[in-house]
Length: 410
Image (cartoon, rainbow, N blue to C red; front, side, top):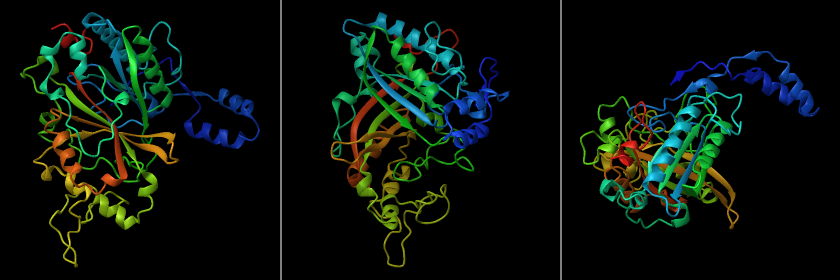
């Protein structure tokens, strides 16, 4: 990520000073807190606020971008009667506001001002097309086979109202107001062309919350994301991005996102002992290292046995079953958010993981791994797949292009 010069946005006081003032004066009243902040000298934006992601490039932002602390996922269906012409106009509007917002600029006329005073905060907007989009726009000949419906899995309890959609937008930022501003802007810019089908909100740990950058933890307390493909690996692009020269040129540089709302049965999980939790996952909870030893990045020793002659990493452990070497090398780039939507009707937390994974072909990435997990993952009794979607995110727009132009104007 690169820093950009921002002249119109400034934070009042340092983060530390503002936090200390708020705590000290909280019992006195809001007016005193405001006065103390307003009298402080203006300073440069903090690193969190000043970092920006490029809108244009070979790939869309929000795929290899480091995890942001706040995320919104929103799916739309084209309005009745809307077709290819209306979809193209919508993507033009969305692309225009996305480029401005990602640069830390107002959305344009009618900007709500929600994100005033903040920098871009690593904001990304990523756009994708669902299978039904191609029927509604008369572009079925351009629909990739990789968008064929995902197979049914025995553990699925999917809500159709919160699944799929013609269009999908992933929003991420390191500031909650910046992320909400982008969400609200996208919703308004849809106009009469598209209607919201579903929306989900997520979060991750904030940058700087740990002494050094770390793989994120999920709501089970587990390190989640170990073993992700890395851009430095020679086969990363082949696994994650669609190559040029394929059947559908408009997808060159693009990727496919599988989106799953996975509820975690936290009350049941938290009744397990630490040792049992680690056996279910196959990794230490403290640092994410394999039960066979080493650090988080140490390879799993899947053949190692203990003094009792049993496998150290149980044969149904989540880490074992999902390991690429156990799935013919199948790999996907996991980029999830946690969610908590209050309490469910049964009194348990409605919380879990907004699972998002990226791959060049879901039939070679997500599907084989999920099929194997579906047959015997020790984690399965503690999770519930409640919603699902599959979307084709085209490559990044070039200068003068809007996202999806190569499809919609083909």
